Image 1: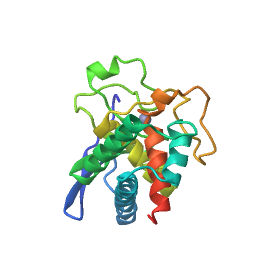
Image 2 (image 1 turned 90 degrees about the vertical axis):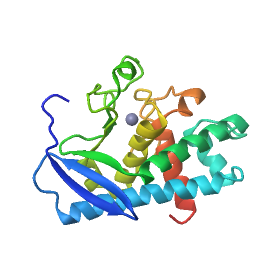
Image 3 (image 1 turned 45 degrees about the vertical axis):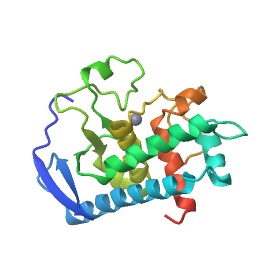
Length: 215
Ligand SMILES: [Zn+2]
């Protein structure tokens, strides 16, 4: 991210959690701050509801969403897969519930998490997330434009990027991204094993399952 500087900082408190919003422009309006804070709170709520929902096992909704997003077939995720799904959701929730810094880019269409040098060597990084490593480590960058354009997409993007940052999920090229209207994958080809570590799979799974719990 050559030339990208986040000189300005706005600090928000959310139920005792401190969120630092770093931005390039001097001004982050109160309305934008409120919208972004609401999206973070909603992402946390959806994750929390999803985790509670599957804590005693996957019900019919959870199995159906797992079939769609984790490609776990008609029988749903097996025991090891259920454990993995829960663990990644919990790590993402925990990370988003503690203090963190989010860098708000103004012009991109997506978010990404900067990776360490060794991670960047992994060929599995996608174009929109794998924009390289930087010295500030695993910073979570999210497009302000994308967040403010559509609140649902903003929430999904926060969970997606949070899962990268806090639970080491990956992207798998165009076959790992859902269409924004959730009608399918950008391209076919994602395998079941890939889906179980795929960021967008967790973002949409938590978004849909959390919604069935009234979030
Ligand atoms: Zn990603």
